[in-house]
Image (cartoon, rainbow, N blue to C red; front, side, top):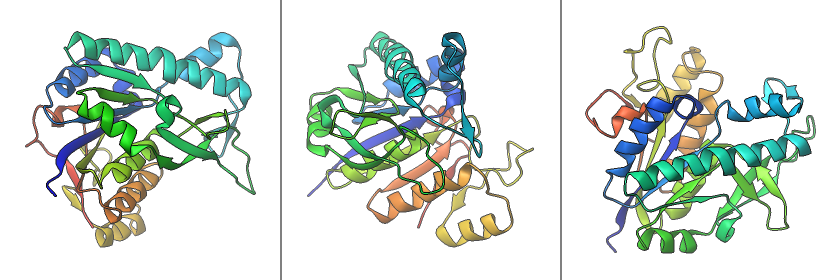
Length: 260
């Protein structure tokens, strides 16, 4: 069976927080002719809103705890403010987009993270997607725009890592499409030297990834992102690229391709 191409792009906080960069990205994103899905978090907008509302940000080991108050802030920011601004801009580029949480159409379901050491509150880990329903949207020429909110199918919304949502969508839809997963952030790719933006590592396979970790070239937040990448490739995702938003209009620019 010949499968259609599907492009899934996740944009990072530094893209969302820069109106000019976001505008250019959405303009380029709208020109993609194949079916496409956009996934986003909320950048620093949730932190700003929490301060305005007097909601205290609680951190454990550098990670935010999503208590009931902070979950409300995340829903308001991700599913409301950020999501609808993005959808409105896409409509301005004649792109028929629809903004979604995982609860809409039961599209992405998760379970509350259980951690014996720390309780991060209402944080969800994805356990499945409604691939047939999402395909119906795509077949109708609609572009789904998913924020970083899922649900547990029991009435509870959960704050969920946007990288994980993008990976789960790519894996879940890989039986129906040839899926390309693109992580867009402020750099041109994974860097050999964090101080040199041109030191892009153009290809990373599983063995070289282990060496890069051992030598502390890849560390901190890039590790879970790359772990997600290799898990996705192992489960049928065709292509994974890490780069900045310009990769859409200039696919020949420097970027990092992840391979098994």
